Length: 84
Image (tube, rainbow, N blue to C red; front, side, top):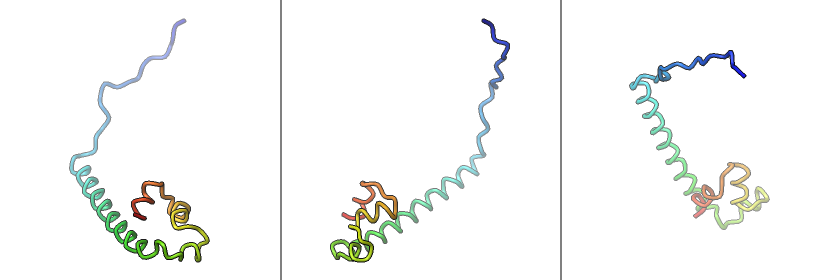
């Protein structure tokens, strides 16, 4: 059995954006992660006041960890970070 298809692969590597553009993306990513870290710290401080108060159960009808799972789509390790 023979194939009539020819390979059209190029020997040239895919184009890479200029270093300056990638450096800007890297800097922006770092800023976003640093901002996220600040917001997580704020959330931890607020949740520290809520934990054990029963307010989540009274207001939302769920324990705090289950509420965070459902509303914030947090996995177990992320919830543990916020709640411990």
